[in-house]
Amino acid sequence: MTSRYILALLLTAAAAAVSACSDDGGTDPPPGEDPFFPADYLDSYVLVRDCRFSVEHDGVYVIVHADPASADDYVDGNYPFEEGTILVKTLFHDENCSDLAGYAVMKKGPAGTAPSSGDWLWQDVGATRSVAASGVLQACISCHSVCTEGRDFACTDK
Image 1 (tube, rainbow, N blue to C red):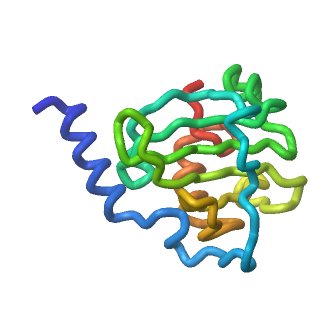
Image 2 (cartoon, rainbow, N blue to C red; image 1 turned 45 degrees about the vertical axis):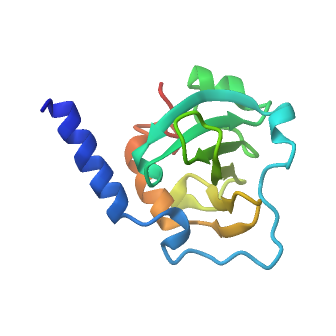
């Protein structure tokens, strides 16, 4: 076994042991809260990361879209992101990214919104666009604060 394979196995096991953003005791959204992103986001948001496996999100496959005003900053690694930036990680059950599982969403709030998370707020959104959790979600923060290495809590490739 290669060390990369062993690392992948360990990360998969760790991801299974760590709860998803919605399971961390974070804020319950108000009844009927809307997702941060529009229902027709695929018509205007820009694809910034193609379909790939994500151990960090409970072993699903993901595609990332950014709102049109923030897409170039995401791709070019221009940090920090502007207030109002919305990043949508669409989650899928399959490697073809065709069987929708839900969404993990980040929204950059105004300065002072959430200082411990770079003013980012998160949402766990179901496949039917129901918001399961919203706000300062500690499970999201704990991962995003580690993987960003100065990338403003966005786990980009840059």
